[in-house]
Image (cartoon, rainbow, N blue to C red; front, side, top):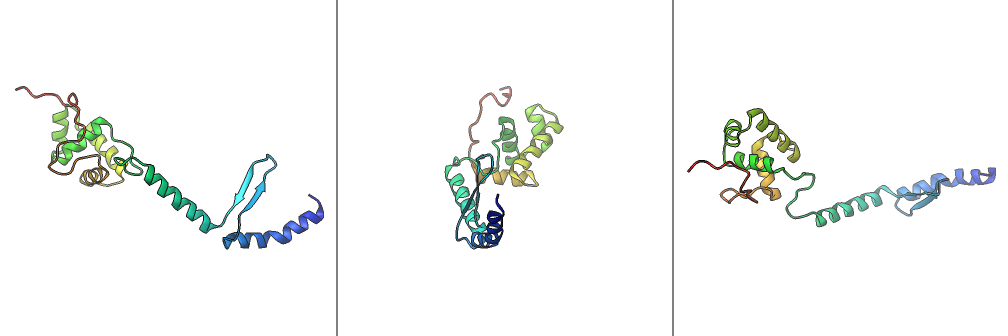
Amino acid sequence: MHDTDQALASALWPHLLDAIAAGDRRMYLQARSGERVVMISESELQQMESELRRLQQHMAPAHSSPGVNRLTAREAETLQLVAEGLSGAQIAERLGRSANTIAQHLATIRRKYGVRSSTAAVEAARRAGHLPAAGQPPIDEHPHSREREPE
């Protein structure tokens, strides 16, 4: 850069930054690699982020909750049994698993929903459409997921 160009850039830089911060314009710069760099105001960035969130919510499937990974079949079954009022020990016995395994499933479920209790996870799962409302049959019941009791 020539001395004149550098002096001009130094003199204009604060004015350009003020204009961008005021939301007046965008500034496009080109890096030596040829990649373009865009500077925009904070308010324009917030607008873009808001629009992105709106689009993501619009495009998200109705059965999913933002930030919640789908439950595995075992996690869903475990959470359904919590919803039915069974304790961790009762769930372990019913599913033929150890109490520690069930405790790990419940910890993973709580983490996925960002809640501190299994009861709160049940409510979050119902709101997200991952569990039926109280008194409704289970969603997507897998016929082979539970052992049949002798008749």
